[in-house]
Structures are given as structure tokens and as C-alpha cells.
Length: 485
Image 1: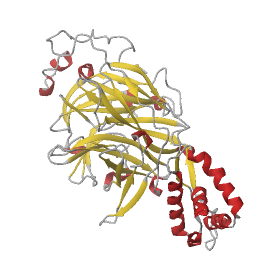
Image 2: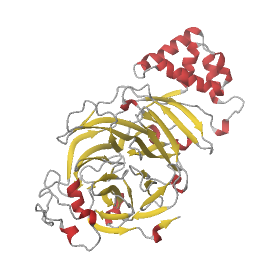
Image 3: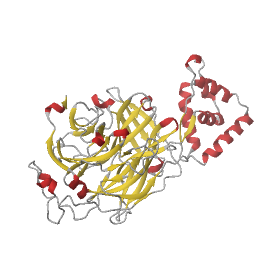
Image 4: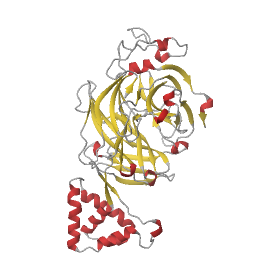
């Protein structure tokens, strides 16, 4: 990856006056209101980006059991005796000896790969039996077999593991002084280019290195309960209390609106007005033809609530929630025009309409489109927003902007050059792409996990002092002409 300076070297600071006690010239020369920038004194020699050796690659050995529902080709559909019924009839007709051999043949190897296998298969049988009364008289062996025939092993990250977001781990117990434990949310791609949400944990050490915990040997799907809300919308409750580690949790598509993917979660540790923190994440549900925005919420990464967003923004992409309310309202970044970053406020966490255009393409590397790269990060100077820009040959680069802490419609500064762009590592499933769905601040350093070529995940540290110093000052505020009611 090329950064604003060659990797492994101290940035060239000859263009700025970075002597101790000297204000950065970019902020000194402007007559704009730069109140939040006047005291910034970058260190004399600061590397902007430091690449780490840590790499996360897809692992085809990690599988989860998920429902499988055989169906007829449309021209051969038989409503009185559908394919699922025919499969059940064949299994119920097996003799005792053949049934026992088939149960052993299928279940013995599966028990090494999935915890509480019999329970999972019997749960799946109950789901099938609700629609096929013929199955109600099945004996124990037949129930297990029917559950197995209507399930599939799915390698949820066999093709790619990318587009990471990152938050502090809810349990910091036992962490050494100066270290920080974190949770990564990642997009895994498996068979049929279907996307799922998977997790890893790790430690960002005081010396700047990153250690990723080995993932759990097993992975589990949810116990799913759906609730219909008074407005007719659905709320999904996902229970992963059977998991022994966050990395065992997999959120795979379970609704038609998610048929081809639960994509690009942007996690944020959200703090309410009373100081209580929960983890929330916006995500894109892809049916195969349409996209919809959704919101996930958890306090422990064992139980989740998932609900679709309502309003104009439901069919957009790239929504990212601010880490707290602003002026008593929720705030969100979005990209509903598929070209620019918008700022939207709402009194209701799930109702999002209108908005103001906040950041639009300016530089060649973002001339096609731009968007946010995760939830804004609150630092001393304001809200730091990582952005992505699409330029020539569909190169995806990362950028950054700074928003006012009290009035995020006011843009304080913005990078003119990419923070990261594809160079040596550019080959993969989708070449010429670097991307992220979030970063984590500790003191004056940012831990930036990022995807390469829609294939795997790398990590870098970013100096916040150097990043702010590189920004071009703005002091601009969104005008009425950029608003949508």
C-alpha cells in the first residue's frame, strides 16, 4: 500500500514548519474560523502511517450449519407434492438398518465440526415439520436425518475475509497496562458470493503491534426468534449464547431481503445520554437485486437485535452512526446519492430521511464517487471521518475529513491526497481496492484495519497528529442548497 509517505520511512515534513511550539502553516495562513485547530502542534518527526505485519486471510475450514430448502424448478412444480415433501417421504421409507447406517454416515464426521449437533438438527427438523405435517410421526433417527437433509454446511469465509470494522472489546479484564482488547467485525464471502458477518478478537499492544486471537475451532448460527412490531415491521432476535468465543458467532442471511448477503457492518460503541454503552452496527442487506439498510444492536456479542431501517435511506448504502447523540438527536452519515457523503439527523434510531450533502468528490482519486468508511471517531479536535474515493480504473483509496464536534455539518479539514491507496498489494477478488468500515483511536494513534482487493485484511497505525497536520483547512458549513427534506 502506498501512503502519504514511503512505508518504513519518516514522512517528509519539509513542506511544513513542525518545530516544537510552531503552529502548522496550513492552519496559520487561513482567515477561516479555525478555533479547533489553533493549538495543534505536530511533533517534529511523525510517520503518518505505519504498516503492521498482521494479516487476516479467509479460512475455508470454518463452516457453519445453516438451513437448506430444496425446491422444484418452476416448470415442474407440484403444489400438492412439493419437492421438500418428496424428500421427507423417501427418508421415512428407509428401513431400520439403512436408516441407522445413514445417520452414522452423516453425523459421525459432522459431530467433530459442530457443537451440539443433535440439538441443531432436531431444531431444523421442527422447522421443516411445521410446513410438512407428514413428518410429525417420524421417530428419533428419522428426525435427525430429516434435519440433516434440510441443512447444509456453509464455509462462510472460504473466498474472502475483508471490509473490517473495529470496536473496543466489552471485557478489558486481564489486559496488560497500555494494551487494548478489541472486536473486529468482518465480511466473509462463501459459496455463491454470499456474504456473512463474522468476528475476530485481538489485542492492540502498547508497543503498537497487533495480536489476533486464534478463532474458535467451531462456528455456530443463531437461535432465531422473529417479532412483529406494532407498525408491522419485523424485529429479529439472534441468540448465540451457545458460542464460547465471539469468533464462533456468524450472522448469515436468514431473510429473503438478505438472500445474497449481510454486508459491510459498520460497528460503533454508542454511548447514550446517561453514559451507558451498547454496540450498534449498520449493515447492508442484499437480496440479489435490491439493497436495504439495517441496524444491529448488542451489548455482549452473544445476543443481537436486527431491524431494517425505515424512511428514504432504507434503500441506500454506507450508513454509519455517530458514537453519541448530537443536540439530543441521532446523527448518521450516508451515501444515498451513490456519489457523496451526506449528514442526516433523526429523533428515531430507525427512521431516516432527508439529509444534507456534506462531502463531495474534489480530487482525481475520488472523482467517480466517495463515501464514508465507518462511524465518525470522536477525537480532541472533532469527529474524524475516514472516507473512500473511487477514481480511474475503479481504484479505491482511503481519505479523511474532520467535522466540528458540536456542529458536524461544519467541515474543518480534509485530506487532499489519499491516506492509503493500492500499490504493491493490489491483486485479489476485486483488484485495485483498499477499504475499511472503521478504525479505533487510542490516545493520539489510530488503529486502522483495512481490506485489500476485497480478499483479505491488513492493519496499520496512523498518527492523528500527522493526519490532522496534513489536512487542508475548510471551516465550511453545509448550505441550504445541499439539503433534502
